[in-house]
Image (cartoon, rainbow, N blue to C red):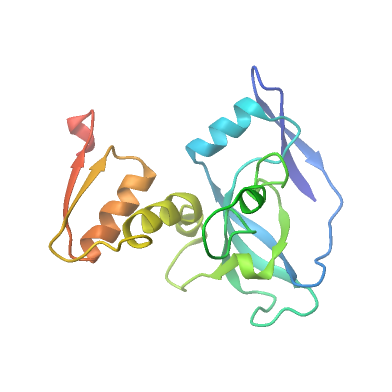
Length: 191
């Protein structure tokens, strides 16, 4: 199996390397990656960690299903949660430590990754792997901001700062929820 490793912090580089293929254990699945996306989080990782497989957001096809896994089959199209240990509830330090592409867990810039089966989400047929790979970090962040603690209501106003991934996801979600959306940018060309 091929994967990329971050080398160096001052001037980070990617190095293509071979690795053994790990088989899924109980409750896990292997996913063959088809697409990955970049987030600002990945820049922070590249500047602060070395000898890790980077990137947290990816999508692919289930290639192996471990024991005691229900609901998943080889060939299922999936997106991988960027923090496999966070399935519900508040984010804790222990859940945060399961972030892909960081200090403790390899990321998705690899041909295959093994993750807990409850950390993957089925893709709709109409969604490409490339589209799905943009969802885990930016999409979930926008969704949580709009709907977790106090869900946005139809007719309310939502102010979004900037035109990055989180803001663009929030724009679409807030409009779908019936909110009035105001978005700002340092560049008129982006509006």
